[in-house]
Every structure is written in structure tokens, then in C-alpha cells.
Length: 580
Image 1 (cartoon, rainbow, N blue to C red):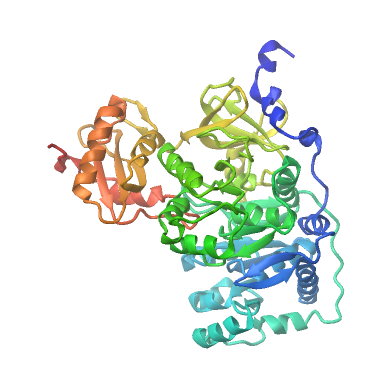
Image 2 (image 1 turned 180 degrees about the horizontal axis):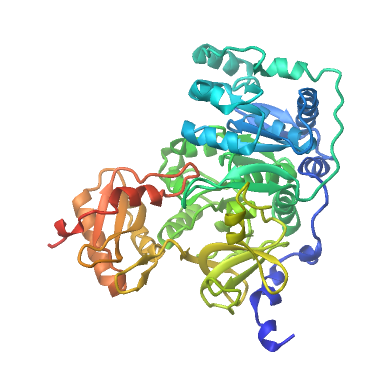
């Protein structure tokens, strides 16, 4: 091995010094996601697995439900290799069904019920499923397209079945659902009755068997189906187990990330379950209620996106609140700019949160989590170090040439948490999963970043989220966003490119800001514009600052840059003036 090779971060793995001894070499258990969940809780059957609006479901009951559901699925003909679509949120019946299907070797095709009906139809039909689960409150939305879905059976998941009795009765009276049950549209209890007397055996472990298909955000076209496997789910959970984190059995985890995303499925469900936590299930998360949820459930751990943390800090419930019960406040799913990070760090200190902000980095294709800060292993503006079974390298874009420490390039990741590929999309799979000269397959993230000399990862921005000027100069939006978020009057901001009206090609940056309530918009925009004009690099200065009532968010709580670009692509910034 040459000296040059030895100095490569992915070979040296200098971050190992922060990990418990032997953690990197532990590997992962070779079992299904269901079996790993069961093994992780064999001594915690009496502990609470799910807290559903105050109704507690123990791990013993969860496992009983999983077996009962798998018997029923087996009774209606579901077998190893089958695909079942699920248009639902994470009610307890959905959660147990995912593991029940995994027990049988079948795959759950998870679909966000908030999607438009054309997208839902496409996701169901392209999955090849013959059975679809639909949450009862979503039935009216998809009813007009049921015949087009061409399914043999629709299983209706109940919203209220697992609620406390009083809440169940009240919500049933309020909902007044009208669903035409019959041979093809089946009530949940009727479905379960089909499994009476049936004993379905769990299938043998297959590492790359697909547990679930989740969908990417669709920022480059129609959302792609990400195939999450037994190994990819279990490796993330086992990384948390082997890290030495202060995750103890029976602590409470606030689950606000939807299970139809990789982030929610793996880090928001499977991981806390495998850490023997009590998962507070929030099927329909309202960011404006974030503060009330934290105050009510007093979780020891939670993970959210930067945009939702901004709303948490602004909630009235957090004024003077003592949050010393919080151990881990994790952030992922999107890049947190420097201005917001400083606000959040101050908020945490003012509210007695024990450990520093635990930022992490991942993507759907990596089962959400690749790097993260833990306990005191932390550096400001870093997204942490690689998890025990993960290797990160920085590569020259569009090449297999690895760069050294503190050199900016494309972030690439390899390890068992990788997806199997995109469902029925070999071309896109080959584009993101590439075999390098070392013989390993690496995920090419499309993110720009660097590893410092201690192995901490820093994200600079997106390769594709660059604004290219007419002269070829590249402007990275995250730099402007960090500067703007430092303003106390700014709640959220997004920098996008608009057409350069003075040249035949190229784009120029504009800043979209969401302001604190009661702030004069014109005055605030003028201050931000003048600040950027003084402090931003000359060729990276924005040509406009625009205040909006609300920056659109994706379902995952990220700024929806694509929606903003559609609105402002041809914006005429020449008509604005920010003079004194």
C-alpha cells in the first residue's frame, strides 16, 4: 500500500478513534428485520413499544399482533416475494403489518397518502401488487381510482382501533366514514378472522430481501422507489446499538417522521424499537403542534428536520420550558445552515438540554443514516462521523478519484445500509450505485462536502443545487442561506437561481425569506439585501430578496426548492430597488 493510499480518509478511517472498541468490526446480524426486532427485545417484552395517543402497546402485544397479522396475510395467499401496497400513515396496524409481511418474506410498498391520485395510481400499478392496504380516512380520496388500480383486494386499516376507548368513540362519531365493504373491500377485523387457526411459519433470512419500498422526494422527476432490505434496516439499528449512545430501554422516542419515508421507517421506527424504546406514534404530524407534543410526552430522544426545529423554537409551549429530560435532539433529512444552527444551539443551552445538537447525514438510498454526532462527539456545523459499519469518502465529481482531508468533492458512501437499488429502474440505479476500483459499490450522493483530519463530515451543498452564472462561476446557495438565517427576524430562507435577464445564459441568486410575525417586510428585505451586498462574495450576491408568508415544504419538512424554482424561474428582479 502506497503512502498516498494510506492517507485517504476511507482507508485510514481516522474516525474510529471516537467509536467504542471493536464497534467497526462487529458486522451485522444475519436475520430478517422482524427477527432482529424480536431478538433486541427478548428481555423487554413487558416494556412499552408504542404510545398511540396515550394507549400503550407492549412489545409482547406488538409481537402477538405481528404473528396474528402474518397468519391472516398467509390465509389470503400472501407468500414470499409478494408485494403489498400501503396507502396509509403509521397507525399501529400499519407498523405491525410491515413486520408481519417481512416475517412472510413479502414487501410493503409504502405510499404517502398525501400524494396526488395519479401518482398513487402509478406507484401501485408499477409495484405489481395485487393487494393494497388503505387507511380508512383516505378511502374517499382513492375511491374514484380503485378500478384502475386493478387489485384483487383492498384491506381497510382502521384509524381508531388502537385508540383509548374514549377517543375511539369520539373520533368514530366525528368521522362517519362510508366505505362499501364487501368481498373486495375488506374490513380489518374480517381480514384478521381469516387467519384464525392458521399458523404461518417465518421465512428464512435473505439479506437483500426487500422489506419495503419507500419513495424519494422526486426533485429530479417522478419519485423513485428505494428498495430497503433486511440488511440495510438492521445495519442502521445495530450501528446505534454499538455506538455506546445513551439510549436505554424504556426511554421515550418521539416519532414524527412518517413511516412511508426511509427516514421514518428506519430511524423513526425500526431503530428506536430495536433500542427497546417506547415509540410515541404521531401518524399526522402538525409542525405547529411540535411544542405541545414535546411538552406532553417529554421524550428522551427525537429526530427532526431543520425546518421543524425552527417551528419548535417559535412555539409558545417552549417559552421558559425546562427540557432537561431531552437527551438526544437529532437533526437530519436536510442541511442545517449556520444561522439556524446557532439559534438552535442557543435554544438548547437556554432550555437545559444535556448534549449538543446531534446532526446527522443520510439519504433514502442509505436507509437514512450514514453519519451522525453522538453525545459529546461533536463539532459545530458538522454532520458527525461515519457510523460503525459505514465508510465515507470524498471523490472528485464524476470520477473514482478519492480526495484527501479537507478537500471538497462529492460525498460517497459504502456499507450495508445501502439500498438494493431503485425499483424497476436499472438506469438510475447504475447512475447512483457505482463499483469503484476497490471492488466495492459506492453510493454517489450528489452532495458536496469534505472530511476533516478527525473524520468529521461537513456538507457544503448539492452538486445539482448550484447556481451557475453566465460566466461559469458556481454559487452555492447554502453559503447565502447561512448568512441570512443569522438574522433574528428571519424564520426560514431559501436561495434559488433565476434567469439572468442581461445575458443569453446563466442564472443569478435570489433570496426568499419567511419572516417572524409582525416584521416590516420591505424593511427586512432591504436589510438582508444590503448585508449580502457587503458581505457575500462579489459574484455570489443576490439580485433580489423577497419576503413570503410561507416557504413551501416537502412532506418531509424540507424547503421545497423545486416549487420555488417553478414560481420564480423568470422573476423580473430588475424592477426592485433596495436603495436608502
